[in-house]
Image (cartoon, rainbow over all chains, first blue to last red; front, side):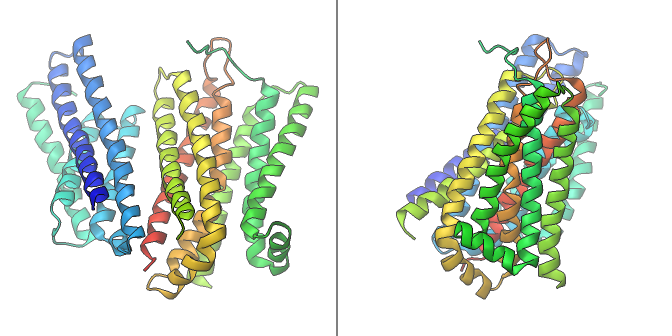
Length: 165
Length: 111
Length: 151
């Protein structure tokens, strides 16, 4: 039980760093490009935020697998076929692919930001809401709606800040 | 401070890459082989105590032998173009992956 | 399960997982315009070492324990496909990873006079490392499916 508790705490820390990092990365990015230039200080803030985001992602991946291994070895392997678990895995893969495409400059920033924020939000909700209703397909459909909604909200914010992306 | 200019020669790159590609081809071929030929599977089991050890063991031996031979050949012929070896490696990986997934998909879901 | 087997299983899962993380890190760095060659060398070699470790530890567990003890449980259970498809694919597809990782690591030591990777090769290398990462992720997930069927 101590081990599960430890893994869960580190897992939650990972999610906090990851999701928090994604939100703050967006906030710092919008503030930084408001004047059209990302100066060295702003770049530093962004780099630090991205580093924390990566650390958080690594922590949650490792502890996530640690938890599944724990369940497997303690006769509770049915958790590994839980739809919540597979939704979070899918969202994680989307986050990783999105990050890669953004890094390779193959994803427009407006879309990449929306996918990142929507994915982290969805992962947070699915992780925290243990009795979330809905199947894998139903929840992923809600997520697919969340992405354009997030993009629309971010666009409103950019317009209010008079930012062109 | 690490020196970026630390490098290996083209011949060794060609040797290693070709060897890795051929090892991958062996893995795919032997995987299919053990599924279609019981005597082949029995041979690997007899020689290596388990067919999976046989596949991996021969892949490793093949890797080292081909690395040595191909590096020598590339050096003697002064061959410096590494791109074909890399392309061979890429295609070998694609075909091996498709073959392995396809094989067990066919056996499990269609046979 | 003995302590030794338990250790091997845990080592297999985490070395494979961290190996995939290293492959992903290599890919993320390689797609950058101003990539760091020392970083690429470290992460790619790390991936090779970890895949080899996962191979050895997983192989030991598979050959000495899984076949006789775990496999029959899965085949007799509610999800026999977990072994007949997912584990069979995993145990063979995994064999490709060390060779793919060794190849990409090798190329990070093959540089031009300016100490950079030949741009004509970079596209192919990105494809190779991307394939390594994707296969690694699929193998990790196949492991979850297999483990989930053990009841």
